[in-house]
Amino acid sequence: MELTINGQAKTIEAANIAQLLAAELEEGHSQRGIAVAVNGEVVPKTQWETARIHAGDRVEIVRALPGG
Image (cartoon, rainbow, N blue to C red; front, top):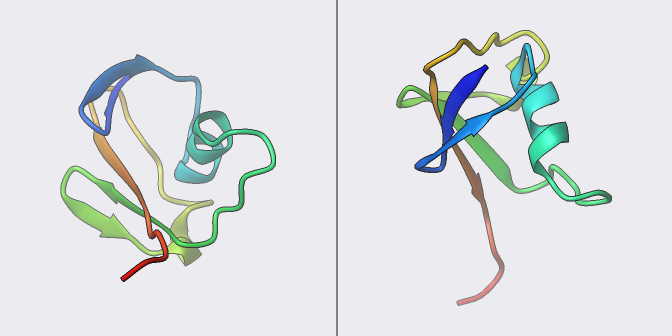
């Protein structure tokens, strides 16, 4: 399906946020420190397995970085 992920149009085969992250994150990278919003609404990590994504959705994936 076609999604916009962090401002870029992509074709992804995923039914929920957990599957989307598995496809988008590099092998071996942790999901720690990641926040996800779909169409401007933050989705809690506890809902990543059940929160469905649909064609045309706008997804923002943000990773917290250490620093000061």
